[in-house]
Length: 314
Image (cartoon, rainbow, N blue to C red):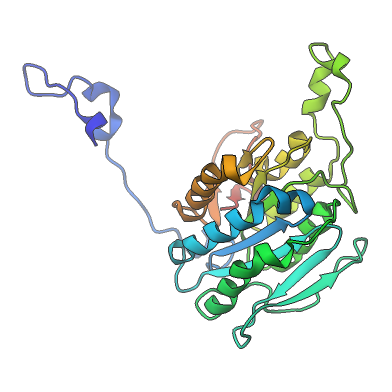
C-alpha cells in the first residue's frame, strides 16, 4: 500500500527501519497440538435475533437487515459448512424452521417467557448450502411478515436465552438487532436518565453502570460456549446501552448504535457496517496459553478453560 512506502537514507535503508520490527525480526508458527483445542473445529455459525416490534417495522429496519443479510450469504465464512438461523421477537418469541425439505420456513411462536423452550430440537440452525432456498424465502418475506404488527413490547432477555439454547453446543456469532427497550421477561429494563438534574453532577456516572446483572451473566455463558455477540441498537428512544453493551464487551463483540434510526437516513450506514461485520476475517474459537508469575489477573473477554489455557469467542 502507498502509506507503507518510505524514503531511503544514504546507505539505501529505509528511514523508519528501526521503527518497523517486521523488517528486522523474524517470526515462527507452530501447529498447535490437540491439547490446545477446546473441542474439534465446529462449523462457523451465524444466528440472528431480530426485533420485530412496531418501532422496528416503522423505521424500515427489517427491510434493510433482510436485504443486507441476503446480499452477504455468498460471502459468509466457512463455506460449505456455514450454519445460519433466525429468531424474531416482540412480546413473544418466533422460531423459524429452515428444514431443507421445506419450500418456505415454518414459524412457531412461544409465548411463555418464564419457561423458554425450543419447539424443535433441530432445523433452527441449519446448513446454509442445504437450506439456501428456505433462508432466501424467509429474508424476502421478512418485511411483509410483520408489516401490520403494532406490538410495542420487547422480550429481549428470553430471546437471548433461546438463542443460547440453539447455539450452546456449536458456538458462533450472534447478531442482535434491538429497537425497543427490553420490557418483558428476564432482563427487562426501566427508563433511566429522565431526570435532567442528574446530568453534570456526581450522579451522572450511574447511567453508565449496567442496571441489570443479567446481561453480564449471559455474556459469561456465551463466552464459555464460544459465542460472540454483536449488538445493533437502532432505537428512537432510550435503549440503555450501558446494560446491553455488556453482551458485546465480555464476548469480544461490538456495539453499533444508531440513535433515532430511520432507514431513509441511516440505511446505507447500517448496510455497510452489517456487511462488514458479516464478511470480515474472523477467528473462531481462539485459544490462548499464558505463562506468567503469580499474582497476575486478566481483564478481557476471556473464559478460563483450564489453567493456563484461556479461550475467546469469535
